[in-house]
Length: 78
Image (cartoon, rainbow, N blue to C red; front, side, top):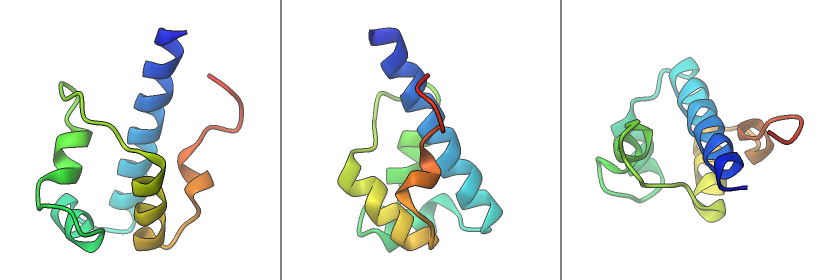
């Protein structure tokens, strides 16, 4: 079960990054737009970091990226 959690976290992080890059928004811009410090998104997107998104933060990010929080999740369980 723990392995699945890591997979879902990696998936969500990669989807946030992909949507952010498609919209040409920097990590710093996104961090500031959701009221976090300038390095918040880069800390989560760094592969070696243990930082995670929580549901409230994902909702703020979705608002900032003008998308649905559902856009970050896979169609089927991993």
